[in-house]
Length: 242
Image (cartoon, rainbow, N blue to C red):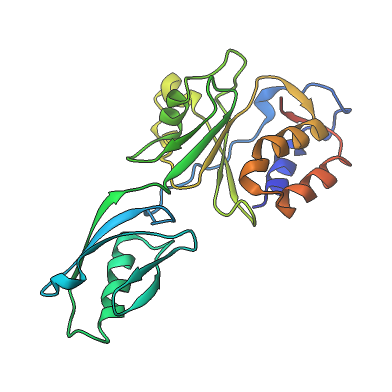
């Protein structure tokens, strides 16, 4: 689901109202919480490689900005986007042309690519290093907690390729500490953007423009968001916004 599609869902129940008119917050639909996925390596991550019975191949490498590493004999190997088992398998497969049944072990030294973004109504909007399991709630705490006008029963989680068709969810963080609802204890993964909205309701066009401004550094002017602005400006209704 694109950003624009999600916002259409959010404003769907508000279509009966005139522009700028407030809409009861209870009418905002709840979307399913996403499941965590396997950790993947990315540019900037550093790890040790050890090859059984081939100590001359033991080395420490850092993934280049293009997602590749340079490995002796093999040359350039694309590793960004691989999970740990996939990385080991890729290295062993690459070495299989030169060694009989190579056995590779990988030890993670530093994870620089594992970042998540916490934006909106938090005390200190931040880029956080995902160095261990982290939930949406914990990320908000690490960002200094919420502002007095923050709304936490529909925190927006943007996951996936923000330059294409990211997945978007509403996470009811308030129900975690208010009702003990562990189904909303969503674990974050690399690249997730957490956006905490305000309690106020504003015009659709203003919301699109506000969200574009906030996300611009992360989407680099993606056509998805430019189109959302263009289409949203022509719509009516109201939505959660600044």
